[in-house]
Length: 48
Image (cartoon, rainbow, N blue to C red; front, top):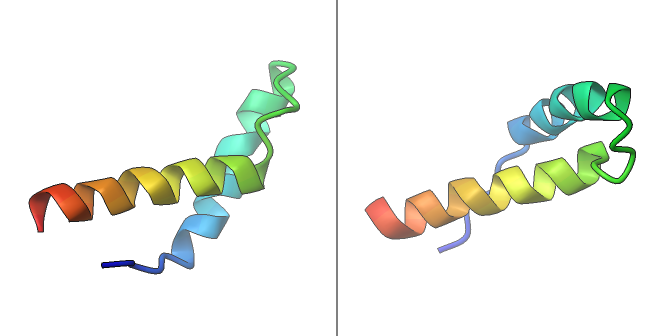
């Protein structure tokens, strides 16, 4: 079952800023959003 999580997009953007400030430019908002969505989806799969 696939869950969509549009609110996580802004969470990914918020999470990306501190990483960029530390020099981790590879962790952009899109990458972090995908990782966060994958994590949340795995929780749904495991506990739903």
